[in-house]
Figure 1 (cartoon, rainbow, N blue to C red):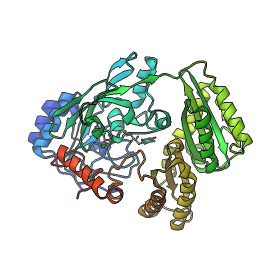
Figure 2 (cartoon, protein in one colour):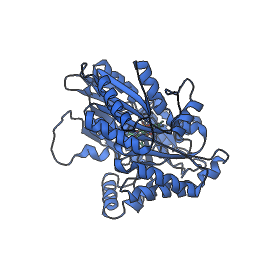
Figure 3 (tube, rainbow, N blue to C red):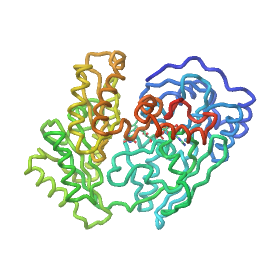
Figure 4 (cartoon, rainbow, N blue to C red):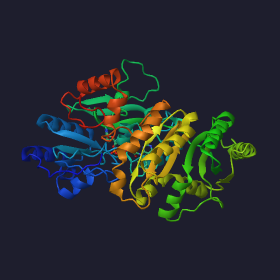
Length: 482
Ligand SMILES: Cc1cc2nc3c(=O)[nH]c(=O)nc-3n(C[C@H](O)[C@H](O)[C@H](O)COP(=O)(O)OP(=O)(O)OC[C@H]3O[C@@H](n4cnc5c(N)ncnc54)[C@H](O)[C@@H]3O)c2cc1C
């Protein structure tokens, strides 16, 4: 839950001198304003406190800084773009940690368009990685609304998903090689560019999704894909959530190879975007309660995806699954359709307090989840405004709830736990997960302890103890203390 920090103590001056000698003045921030900027999360829910912000420019600097902190027994919070939605990237309120930002390590080191790989540093911003891939006539397929800020280290740290997981998988699937600074400052070099490599334990997988609790990712080798030459997108009005799942299924059966994204949105989310984000227009003349954004993509220029898209939509309309649709006629229009989806999180933030549930269930159970989840939350806050949206193709719904119009933020947030519990009860009943893609951070450690209790949690604790025996890497995140 959100918290407020007590006053901070200072960084011991001998350690500060040694860190400055390694990192230079640009690499060690100790002024209050800079520390505060790195200690608050994107949603402004967590206000932590740190001794300093370390900003290494190379792996060697990072390793030496981690070693010095380990020697002094000071805990480290790895941070990349700081867009975590679960409080993973900001320090606790204790004031005895340092933030280690990889933002200065932002170089794209190599693009290999024949081997279809890219080698990058952990502070490279996702949008820059996408652009570098496109410049080499390739695609780096991960795409999410925070791509202008989120960085490779954080995307790996969270095993980020997004709009194209349906087609290309999560971040885990995009990472071939990895370099990690371990808790004692040693460097684990796994920077291989191989598709096949069965040589013992798959160590890199341990660090993907570990949320900075096992080490600091400093470099990665990423897999690239062929760049699509035909892309078609449609904004589709639907009579129900069931119809969204039905339409997804039609596309998977009839054009599964081309289906690149299938995102669900409810009318309330569209209203918020139209209200808060300038220059966004409703693509359809009539208002509807449910929508999907569908995208087909192929590297084949002669794939005729326009014909395929129109064909599936026409048949679905005859079946009553589709009420209306707008197909993008240009790249500008396609991006405008995506903007409606991408701005959901920002628009909801501007509307006031919300409780976010990043959950997944089997795709066929999504309609039941949404119907029963809304009913359960309305028993707690009758005037709550549900805002479910997201990656329906992966069974991953951002099952968010905005506060009632006339309720104060604090009063609504007092119901946080009750709302999350009500949604999670339905998720559990349907065999789902309480955290589909955002991770655990500090927000969901209690739920992890409850849902994964027993051998699964014990195994996580043993891994943590083996790699970080003194508990100095991002304490209080992911694995709860026993
Ligand atoms: C508007 C918006 C939309 C979003 N949409 C999506 C979405 O569609 N899919 C999705 O998965 N997420 C989404 N997110 C959440 C967030 O963007 C992702 O979790 C992203 O991967 C975080 O990247 P970051 O660079 O901001 O990392 P940070 O927030 O800085 O860090 C995230 C976690 O990774 C750890 N970490 C950071 N750097 C390193 C490193 N170098 N080594 C090891 N660990 C590290 C941190 O300690 C923290 O635990 C969204 C967030 C916003 C604000």
